[in-house]
Image 1 (cartoon, rainbow, N blue to C red):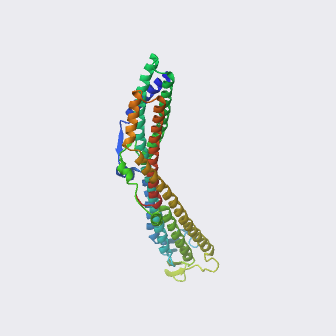
Image 2: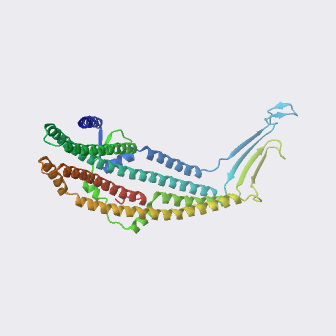
Image 3: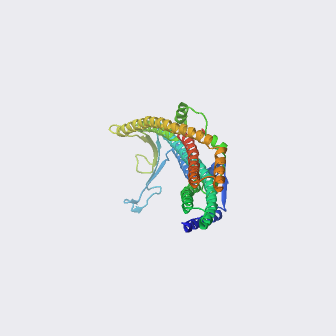
Length: 419
């Protein structure tokens, strides 16, 4: 067992050394600084913004008129005079210019649909930004709280290292029973295992933040207890629901899609109105007159195809989106209600925990440690207290993390920064 502890202590020291070397290039940031880096560096946002620009280009395209069509009819072979490409004064050639005139407001309808698609792309960009921001803020506080707990673990392990060395000496001299040393080693092993699990979570959180911020430096998050208190603000459930109905991106996207379905139905109805094709032509020799100039128009007769099928399909598509909007309203209300209940629960837990964990808690810990070293406290009492103290630190970290996550979830679900 002694060899195991020595190897653990040695590996821990080496691991800490490697971490120090690994963290030479660190990025210490606050929430506002992280948001600034995120908005500047995120390729996810840049990608979504390109989609917005593409949809804006479609608005430009919808505003353009159809191009005129120029047709040239040239003689290839004159069998009477046995000439190829006989297009001179005695030959034959004809020209025609056509222009399609859109009727029924089709062009205006296409422009409106293109604008709605642009609005959907813009809201989608907001949705991506808000989802990533939720993950960013939650991960930042998780990282900061993990680092704080790791420091506490390191302090406790250092204390146990010293105690183990002293106890090993006393056991070797026969002054202390071996079972007391074994119990102390058990407390060390458990705490070291908890630290290893937390360290793995810490590295995972680092990877998430580096991915969101598009940086390679090791991130250190700077925050205070006052920053955590900013997540505790009174807000009513009805206000949260109203805010979500007005600001939540996925709901706004669905509403825009419903509008687009309405515009598409109107567009299909307008397509039933036939367009006019105007033309003017010149004919050198093949017409009723020499050098004949004609003008005319063509228009399809809507006898059988009046776009009935597409109009009917567009009507069903509109009903589909209307049902989806209603379903989304119910889903938003349910999500807000459950998230609000979780938030209230975590606020209550946070207030109770921070009230219980105060300066007296640390004083008791220091007192127990001093009395144990003076042999005024038994090994059983000390290890029980030590393990309970470690569990309390872990629980406090969990409570703080869940408070931030619950508040940031409300920010995401309502589509507005409430906290």
